[in-house]
Image (tube, rainbow, N blue to C red; front, side):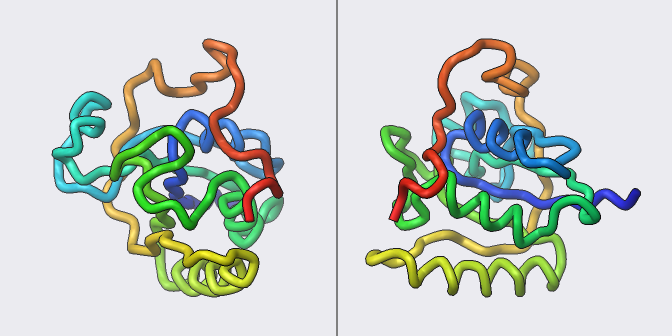
Length: 162
């Protein structure tokens, strides 16, 4: 089995991680930080807005069971890509919407997906599509947060944003 990697930022990483974990073919989803300049950032540093990092999720998936386009479809469904540096009550650059691509095929697919998705929204999509820099896993207490602590997901219910 060849596992591939995809990286997404769509607000609070707890909900993003939880949503991707539920998708058949996803082998692992890890909450973390990417897109900034600080090495090995902490949650406190990222929330302090000094690192430039986004809360993100690195998804390991089996392309024989789930396609990158299916991952993109879920990404668009679980958040509002027209909100700049926020998702619902969570405000700050760490909550930005971004697709961090791993190679030209993912970049092309992400752009095409964004262009299709834009037709469904009256406001412009602000999602960044950029090459994936280094990903830093978040502290252990952030991993599988809802499984460990219960509670409702903090992402949007699929199909409820337009």
